Length: 313
Image 1 (cartoon, rainbow, N blue to C red):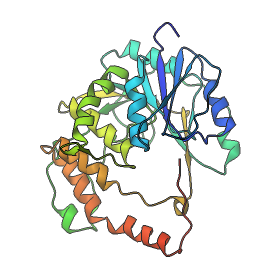
Image 2: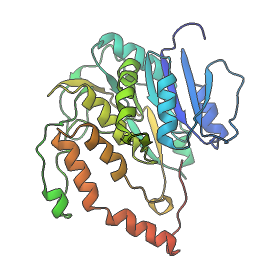
Image 3: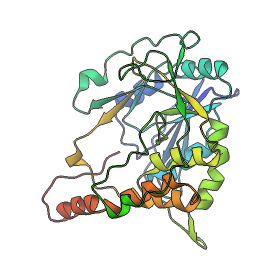
């Protein structure tokens, strides 16, 4: 591929994805590249398609694999996609049209539909036609829980005050995460340079003591989403827009009983380490700390054989 791709689709994988998922990915139109990142010793699948690039990460783990893919992406824009989630075939066109209209935006958030893994008819359903992005009006708020235009997305409100209730009163629910902002990174189209310029600071933050590096197996989605926004944080700025329905991503959900317990507090610690000046990340960390009994209890059930669990993705 001689010219710069419009979009890089980065996927950390063990290579166990279905043929249908791969065929659906290859049906995406336009000048795109598919960046597959495997762990060491996995026996990477290869395909005879010039759009496909392969990398074998020196370390096993979703976070390390995704960072490897993001670092090597060449497209103007980049999206992180798991190997069982589905993407609209016109996604590259969405990206190109949107950023021509909003050149100062960092990202375009796609509309996501949660589909249970057994709902094969919904997974394989044809994609709906998305309204013309050149014509869509910009809106600032939901309209009765819905919106028909491009919804403005504010940057995550990092300057929220520290609330120690989240540590000492586990029954207190977080409210600082309410609003139109978001925390996640995956399934969102980002400007590549925004992400790649943040990666060196991200990798530096993972160094906990001398050469010792701490990369959590879980929580990279939220960690990376908040981290990138924190690197360039400006109070109250609009970072992008959210596309209305019909859906452009199908996120495949699984029964929670089938999912191994995940300790997000480890990745949340990295946010506090990188940006200790922001109350928002402290509230997130303290809340997870006070609720640590939940994944610990689930892990204990697994060890005692009281539930059915398996590794996902």
